[in-house]
Image (cartoon, rainbow, N blue to C red; front, side, top):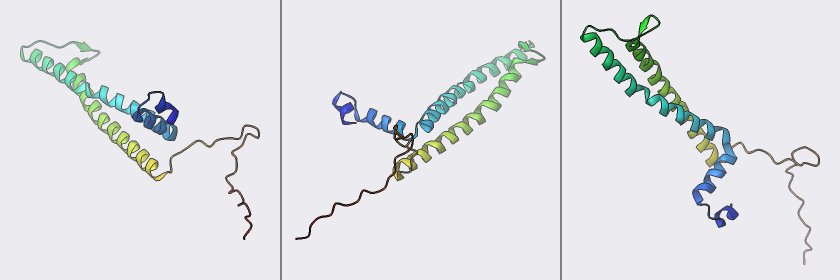
Length: 137
């Protein structure tokens, strides 16, 4: 880490690399969940525009474009009914995963991949080394 800081990297990038080393699966899942939730957040305004267009067409006696047997305005209603609760569930699960990762990081119980001994293909033992015997004077 000191080498990265000496090369001009900030403390924030060092923190990010440390978090990725501790629990990369939750970090990537949290980023992906945030991306999906942000994209689902755009459904509301788009659907509102489509619903207003649908209602204004109906008020003037016209018909909206049909997709199959259903008019597009009804599909916008279904999209809002599905997207907004799904966005809430995804954001809640993301918050739970990030809080769990924070607790693991603070408590030291993060999943760290063990270093293997490549000569034997197994994890080295963690036995304490015997103390050196000092002569008592």
